[in-house]
Image (cartoon, rainbow, N blue to C red; front, side, top):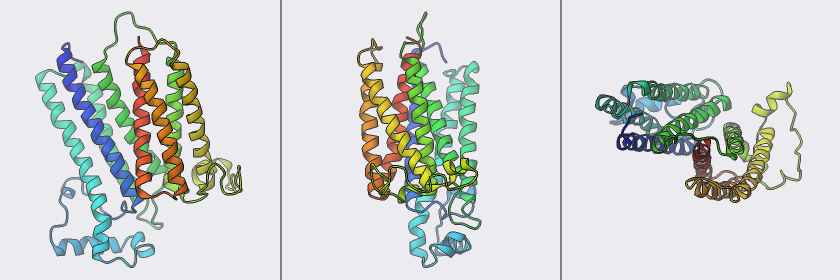
Amino acid sequence: MSDSPHQNRIVATWLLAMCGLVFGMVVLGGFTRLTGSGLSMVDWRPIMGILPPLTDADWQRIFEMYKQSPEFQKVNFDFGINEFKGIFWLEYLHRVLGRLIGLAFLLPFIYFVVKGYIQRSDWFKYLVMFILGGMQGLLGWYMVKSGLVDVPEVSQYRLTAHLAAAFIIYAYMFWVAMSLLFPVPDGARKHPLYGRTLAVAVLIAVTIISGGFVAGLKAGKIYNTFPMMGDFWIPPGLMALEPFWRNFFDNMVTAQFDHRLLAVTTFVVVVLYWAKARKADLPRRARPAANALLHTVVLQVVLGISTLLMAVPVVLGAAHQAVAMVLLTVILYLVHALRRV
């Protein structure tokens, strides 16, 4: 952190812009997954892969590679070159955006280091951001590889890890940016609501992770009713797998049930938290954030129920994922605002 508030604001603005790019990456990733485009590129070329197919021969070459994949052989066997192009471009844009994010981070970071905006004592935290971003690219390919072997579906474990890693990188950059914009005052102490706010943040994070397993298992395609799951409050087959712990990660019924339960619990907890917060003596910047938390969780519940009832249409599914990140942003802002007052 620089001694200059002006320099800190500049670095914080850059980090928030990076958060915006990561947000866009997550949303684009949601569209890629929901449109079935994620397995269209069957090779990974971190450097040369920036160039798309430019000639008919290039398109035919990569289409022939795709034909060897289990997705083509078992799902899209009737695809021609034009249909293949339709799923290729989203995955291509997703990968290119990842590379651009790397450049958008590295080049300004070098500039800020040279100019002295980022002090030597803070280099490590920014290097961690860059390393996490690079590892996220590797994790993305590791996820894709799971769908290129026998079954044309990516592993729900790897997909959830990939999604969680994106949220972690986003949260880390956002937290550092907030620390630059709102330095801790002398003699500050934790607000009495800090512990409860942190607990809400953990609950929201767990709910988001459970949503990753729902997405990976395509569990949103079953039991498209609410509040009951079909004719049941507790559906059959909830613990059908052995050993029992596998049900939480491999069983479509359990994954959807858990996510419903966590989502409703999160909604109730946030409403109770908001009722408590509105009566508390909050810092000036925390009060509108508490209201935003309530509004965002209501929107997220409406989106979640609508997405389920309509069997996960692409736009609603992507919006549900995007608002999850907005919800995480709001609760992180609140945690930061109340950690030292």
